[in-house]
Length: 199
Image (cartoon, rainbow, N blue to C red; front, side, top):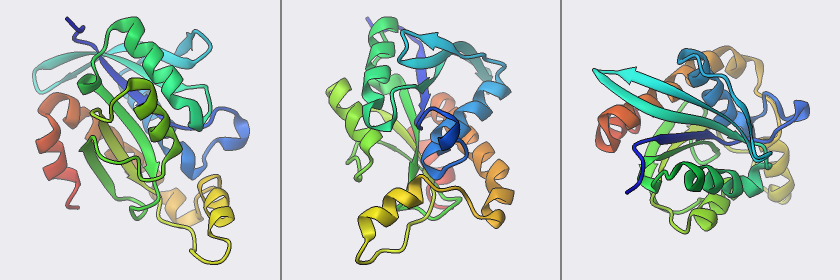
């Protein structure tokens, strides 16, 4: 029988040079959640920064692990599957927060399963967990210019920072992302989708 813990993981790349980049939206939302619920993160087997906490909302107390994989984006699955195995957490109790270029900046979509949409972190988790049936909170970053150099543009884009106008909105967007995670965990997928996906 799986434990009743939830694993909430934000994806990103560790290290100073990646701080504040689009690809680290997952880390940023996780930091917001950890601050809200007063959870401090420490090393788990060199694979992730993880911390144990409670989310107490709408009369519910959820036991959670918050995690930021330290494995770089393309290998995020190693950290997620290690935590799931170690604490016996089922995929339906996993919430992954990640950046998504297919959504405009500020848009948030909540889903369970479905394709990785070209996101290497999600591909890695699908492979390591052996399923795509886990929950995701997709944080929109908007898209690079598509054109002759689309691939380089995409890499520069996801590893680039936010322009000033977006930087100003970022705290609100990150707080919305944290709200989406909390709603998904406490009220379920349908409620979170209804609230966030259509906005």
